[in-house]
Structures are given as C-alpha cells and as structure tokens.
Image 1: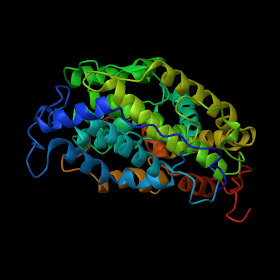
Image 2: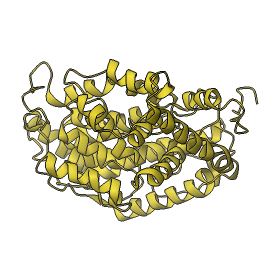
Image 3: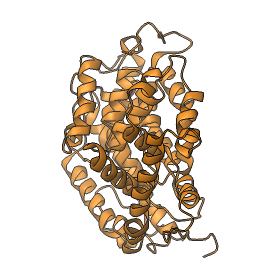
Amino acid sequence: MSKGNTGKKNYIQLSEEITERIKEDRRNGVKNPCFTDNDVAIRRRQDWDKNTLLRPAYIRDVEKIMHTPYYNRYADKTQVFSFYKNDDITRRALHVQLVSRISRNIGSLLGLNTDLIEAIALGHDIGHTPFGHAGERYLSECMQEHMGQYFNHNVHSVRVLDDIMNRNVSMQTLDGILCHNGEFAMKEYRPVPLEDFERFDRKVSECYEDETAIGRLVPYTLEACVVRVCDMIAYLGKDRQDAIRANLIEDDSIFSETAFGKSNPEIINNLIVNIVENSYGKDYIAMDDEYYKAIKATKKENYEKIYYNEGVEKTYEESIRPMFHEMYEKLLSDMKSGDKNSIIYKHHVDFVKDNTSVYGNEKYFSTTSPEQMVVDFMASMTDDYFVDLFEYMFPKSPYKINYVSYFA
C-alpha cells in the first residue's frame, strides 16, 4: 500500500430516493427556483457586457478572471506549504481548480448555474498574498500600522477585479468572491438578498474598518453558498496529502476516523453526497449534524497536526514577517519619492497601466494612496518573486529563505 493511503476507504453513494428525484426533475424540465439567471447579472457598467447566447453573463466573468494577468500568478503562490521545491505540493492554482470542480459537481446536481459557480471559484483567491495566510497576517499588520485598516484576501480579490484591473465583473460573482471564506464552517448556508452595488460596497468597506465584519459575511446567491462550503471541502483532505508529501507527517493514520472518513478522496466524495442529500429542493445549502461536527473536528486536527507545525511557524515568524515589514517600508518610501525607476513603478504602476481593461482605470491611479499602492503590489507577488525582490532590495539582509530541496 502506498504511503499515505492507510486503511480501507469508504465511499457512500446518493440514495435511491434523491437519485430518482433528480432524474425525474431533469426529465420533466423542472428548474431550480434558486438558479441565478444570466439575465439578472448586475454590473457597474450595465450597458457593457450584455448577456448573449455566444457569451452568457457568467461565462464572461470566467473569461474576464482567467485573462486577468494576476490569474497566472496562482501557480507560484502558497496554498499551505511554503519553502518546498516539490511540484506535487498544492499551489493556489490547483486549489481554485479543485474548488471549481467540486462546487460545479454539487451545483449541477442541485440544478444551479455552474457558470456562476466557476467564476466565483476561479476568482476567489486572486487577491491572495504570497506565503498563504501567514503573508495575509503580515500584510494586514503593515496596513494597520499605516492605514488603520485590515487586510483580508477575499476583500482584496474583489479589489483586484473591481478596482485595480477594473474588469466590470458582475456583482453576483464579486459578492461570491467576497463571501467565500472557507475558514468559517456552518451547518447551513442561507443566502441573504443584496439589492445593488451601493449595499455591496458597504459590505466591502466594513471589512476594511471592522476586524469582525468578515465573520458576518453571507453570500446572496445559492451558487456562492456552494462555493463557500466547497472551499473548505477542497482543502481539508488535500492539506493532509500535502503534509505527507512534505514529510511533516508519516501518513494519515495519525488522524481520527470521522463520519466522512479521513482521506482526501473520502472527504470530497462523502461531503458532496451529504450536502446534496440535505440540500436538494431547498433554498439553502446544508449538511446533517454528524457531518457538521465531523468538519469541525477535522479542521481542528489539521490545525493541531499540520498548520501549527513548529518548524514552519518559526520560519514564518522569524524571517517572512520582518521581510514583509522591511519591504513595505522601502516600497512606501520609493512610492512617496516619486522615483519612476523604482521597482514599484516599473513592476506595478506601469504593469497595471499596460494591462488596463477596455474601461480604463484612471480612477485607480487618481484615488489610490501610496500606502494602498504598496499593499496592492505586495499582495500581487508570488512567493518566488517576493524572495527575489527582497534579496535585490536588501542584499546584505540576514533574512534568508532556505527551501527544502527536491533531493533532501
């Protein structure tokens, strides 16, 4: 038996009752009343990007996101494990694809708009920092110190698409991205109506000013609720696989057996089934009590046995954290000096200008403070770019990142 695959796997199937209901509804052309129709897509420029047969509204959003330059940077951004030269460890590019695949599977079975689901899933982490949630914490520290505001990757993902790149993405997609946070497990996910961009903008602003606001975010489409729970499904077991590949743990035998199992394939399969069984024909997404408790227990074990690994945390705290702060201060100084030959001008200001959308982005440059400009630049960096830039800016710095070799 290969490393990491301990014990017999248990895969449950959809019940005959739900299977027949889905088949019967499909035969009769029954449409889910919670399906978010393409015709209701709301955009800031409502006269642009009309819904058409060739390019339906949310397919447009998918393409807008995939052709945004920052989408390419998913490939070198940490999902959970940094400092490894290992092509088999998940990067953020794979994570968003897994979220998209799992959520489209559930959305298809529930009769929801899978194009909207795909758009939300592919865009949900596009504003994430290098070095995962550690980088997010450290950039938030810089933002707090200089701006009195909080950084959250989900909020910044909206900023990337809506402000920096100005892609005229629909409010339905943007709201799903804003409210996707998979760190907050719930037994039921019930959509809350959202009238217009005025209310949406207030939701975004509250997250910058109030540290607790992110925990109160609730999506307003059922498709977004699906993505939110699938963000969690996609990483619960996958992080365990990666921990084994990174040699942090020997195999999955250290984890407790729960209602849906403990391996990645079991977790994905069995949670999909449970959610469909408990959500079909309803206007909310749900799982049963047993599975909800199992999710909480699984997350707790992951934190205890993976995420709080002493060696990894030490590198983050003793190296990455001071590197974030030093880089922020230097880039801010360059920005305020107006040195057009500095890195932040050449690799961010000029880059954004060169990749402007057809709608233009003059407002971004006329309203963005130097402090926020540095946040935007640093959040856009990949792990390798961050490390190389730091060495370029501070060649004599004692802070160095030592990667685990392929041959270690």
